[in-house]
Picture (cartoon, rainbow, N blue to C red):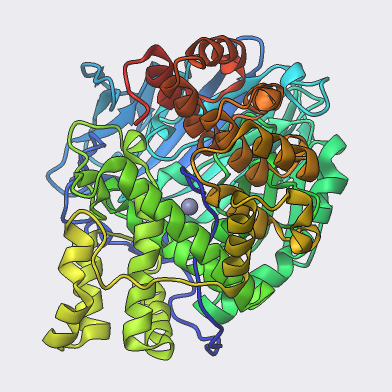
Length: 638
Ligand SMILES: [Zn+2]
């Protein structure tokens, strides 16, 4: 997923690696031994016991009821059993389980007690020889994964919308399965929706236009590559599609199609660039679904169909690093997955690193370096916010007793990427690229832990060189808080000029005298606004706003940076823009810091509560879970 806290991408140069084969195809479902993909570290966020019985395939047959806000139907699970196992344990949360059958008869099942974070275990008795069970169930209208939007919350305004967000442990709120990233599953689905709506999933579309049935329109899907269940995703709405290249295209509401297609015009080029760096793209298509504004994330790397926030539609393709990020997940995250959520950095740190390499290939070293500098600032800010000895600054996280989603910060992304860039700088790009390429091949379609990564690093890169391992401070990077002192320091000549201009302004030069600003890129604006000192005079704020029209910016990143400055200085003329921004998009990366900043002031608390009460219905559960405690004062914004 793209970024929780502020920032964009990471970096370096090209190094073309010849396309090779590696493990291009996933192992056939039946050939996969029970233990191959099991991480030795237990997944504390799942009730499943996959070393006894493992789900290998999920077949959904569901209908969407937009009035009741419920999905109902069946999930048929294929199971791989060890000889002695006679029960399968699944994860559920808020599901109404009606009936379970297998081998031609009803099966005995029990739902365990409710855990606030994990939900309830569903234990099903398995008669001998039963390797497929069918569960009839309904979701709850409050299912955390699903957001049901009123027509008024969409771009078109006429039809309702539904989308899902499975990461980290939301999938169990709409599918009863083993909801652990260590349990890879293939899936198929039949989804019935009202006739005037269109369903898409993170899978191959077998019936792109759907088939008319007695109750609506039915769409069929299939994903033959085994994925962690958090990658099973659905979107339903008034959707149109435009092809952008042989393997690429965009889905969105008709009203947004032209803008989205224009913004994503480089999609096919991106896939080709990624292949030159990482090896073959193994998922067939790379389409993007641009969602309504409430989507809580920047993007979500659902296979074959990345979900993206409309806030990337800047009009000038300046925020497409987000798409490079989601594309990079096709390798780091989707192909090689964190086996437990403690190793989330394996998904996000690698992806943030690769994202910046892609930006370098596509848009040049200058832009990549600018993005690195912005990222490093985010990392420093995050470590400062958390405190350098806080255990949440450790890459391999301790998540006991916590929802993995609550523990998401910039650390997994930026400290993870900085670690990989430090290795690259130490061993040389060519060596590191060779390792990276091999890493994705060696662990393709597997889920691994930090310990397994370390083993792989030692075997294939460090090769017994103890001095090198010490010089890299590998243990410190992975298992200790703060930032090790060998971290590479990115620099950008372009942004250094911007800083000089910023200093001139602070020292009294009028904004209009900053000559180069008319040609600044988004990244330069982000840096300029983000580098401003904490306190500015009312005259300086007014000068900036009047000259650069910052409160009117449509670019979400620049506007966001400016609104933080405005709150810090209680700059009232920007408050209508702040309220508009908070009530027209639901991206948590933007919402959390702005609400936190307001709640930290004496004068802004009231406004924050009032705006939140109005906007909350727009936001996804992922955002409200984060924001509720901030607004209620249960969590200080520090
Ligand atoms: Zn991500």
